[in-house]
Amino acid sequence: MVGAGILETAQNRANAERFLRFLLSEDAQRHLTDRAYDYPLAGGAAPNAALTPLDQIRRPDVEQAQLGDVRPTERLMREVGIIP
Image 1 (cartoon, rainbow, N blue to C red):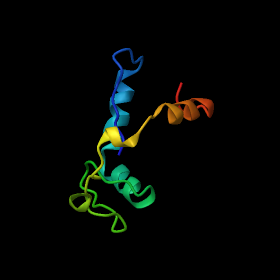
Image 2 (cartoon, one colour; image 1 turned 45 degrees about the vertical axis):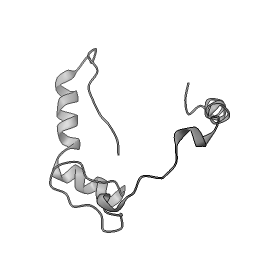
Image 3 (cartoon, rainbow, N blue to C red; image 1 turned 90 degrees about the vertical axis):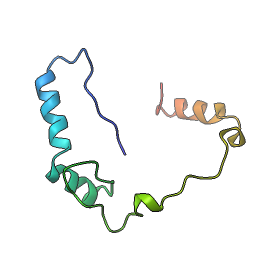
Image 4 (cartoon, rainbow, N blue to C red; image 1 turned 60 degrees about the horizontal axis):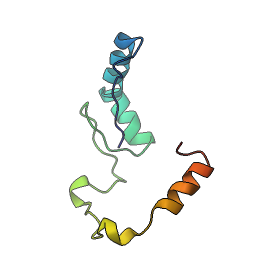
């Protein structure tokens, strides 16, 4: 799932709002579910049958502290340019 929003400093707020409305439209949501295998967020599109229903997805039983030191992962992500 993805988040979207409009920055307060957006230079073309009207088009940004139009784009967000488009992303939430039934056609765009259907495309995202059928082609990108994403869960629909709005617009009346049904989830792709290949996806596990959201109510069947269980949160992993892992405490964050058990995951260990994330600094090596962050360092690698910076090296390859994924994060600044």
